[in-house]
Image 1 (tube, helix red, strand yellow):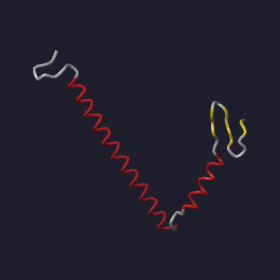
Image 2 (cartoon, rainbow, N blue to C red):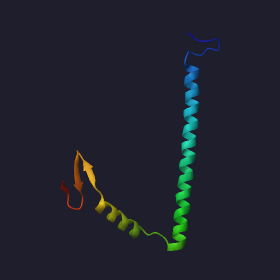
Image 3 (cartoon, helix red, strand yellow):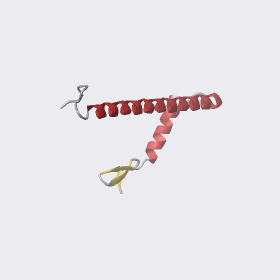
Image 4 (spheres, one colour):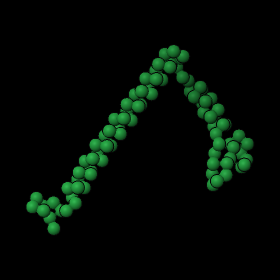
Length: 86
């Protein structure tokens, strides 16, 4: 049964929830954009002091981090360098 304005019970509540979720999503996008801008500013400042970060430097750091990583799969700890379960 509808109300006088033709809405189904619960429809208004659902519409309000949709508006609230949309507002939350907009706030999350704005916060994400703000954080990305902060990271961009940090990197620009770092590069101004130390020079441009090269692809080779990024690859070197990736290799270093991966070699130190501890991977856990199916309850087993696997050390990628040795590829042995412990």
